[in-house]
Length: 70
Image: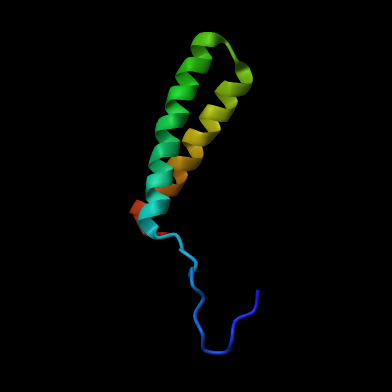
């Protein structure tokens, strides 16, 4: 879709903010913990790995954020 020079589109793109990324990491942490616990109870190894990986990734992001690397 083309626009004239200097014209703004009717629906400008919505970009993500830092708050959205933090919310996503916190939700990922909570969902990962729940999945990890349920998978351990249900003896599902692939879900233990997936849930644990989600927890680790969320903790790495939040740790980097709070330590000032991001």
